[in-house]
Image 1: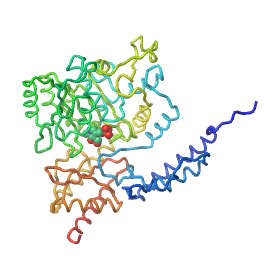
Image 2: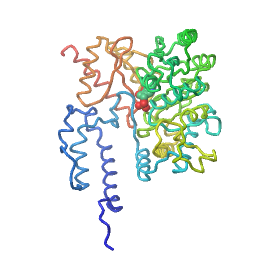
Image 3: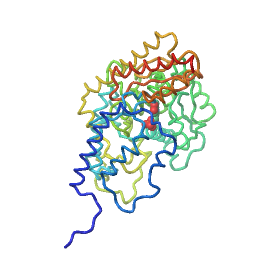
Length: 480
Ligand SMILES: Cc1ncc(COP(=O)(O)O)c(C=O)c1O
């Protein structure tokens, strides 16, 4: 019998090209500092360099890989550059990349325990490991009433928390009947916009998400929260959830969890804690005081894909009462029925988030934790915090600049005292130079520069150089 015609890559070809790709990635990481951090291409430039239609005949893999260098790299902003100080980081690391590659190689889909028991059980296990690693309450353990699950992003975690809170507050009737416009939830004016999106998507409506005012440190004012809840209750509305943040996106503000939790307990509200980036700091016992009160949370999330050296996407989400989440999100059509599910003895993670299908994301997280160990993770987090604090001290001692917010961890918010235009000019010139990448926010109505030290490979020399470049651009201000 002649072999059937096939266009597939053979295992031998895969091995050869796979080695080439791994070599390419290793070379990329070694030369990453030679690229401008922020891509300098104009809109449409990448598309203009690509053929108008798909190839009729398959192409040589070497040619495809060459095009990564020639066509794609110019349009890449180098998030893995140690000179990336923008937004919050989105880290990669060797062990995470390899774990992700293995996940792709296995190519499994873990929607049910039975569709790959290892996918479910490793995830449950690693999320249980993280509970004591981060000083989180024992009720989040799968052996208790709760448990953890990997979501794609913190946005999904906020949405799931809000849906479960909405159902709990309405005796699990809203999924069936729809919202009646009376359900309300609470966040601060500094809460990440994903909460607003969650209010929109969940049908609660963003006008029913109350944005509570903040204090001079940009943290939620508990007394304003209590007042708003009381007002809403008097008006016959149904409060369901408060979202508190450990490390807001704009300024890394820390909401007072203990006081917020007391108010939530008084009114039987779901407390969701969003610690998307700063949660990683809790690996170090000396930073855990920032999350005092987390023991009262109904749900909590942080993103290892931000600061814990784990490739995007990986958000860890825990609930104290898994039954509330499962009751909210579970649907069992006939074609997914199976014996393991019927026994009730297994976790089916499809009931813990919005999508049905799921990748084997815990592999990369497991690799990261095993490669670094708690000791290695703590070492790098402490070093990032030390460098950010050092940067803040340089800002403080330079009369031209001021700090715009407290610096509890690794984000420094600062500005040149000459006003918005000057700060915009400094930032634009730095970003155009390609030497580093910073972004901005507005605090107290003023344009503020944000420098976040958190990229996997950022070292002291990179932060020293960032400050040197900022000072150089500041000294050119008069001549602009
Ligand atoms: C505090 C906070 N929450 C949520 C998010 C949204 O993150 P994701 O992209 O994982 O949805 C961010 C992103 O920076 C964030 O800083």
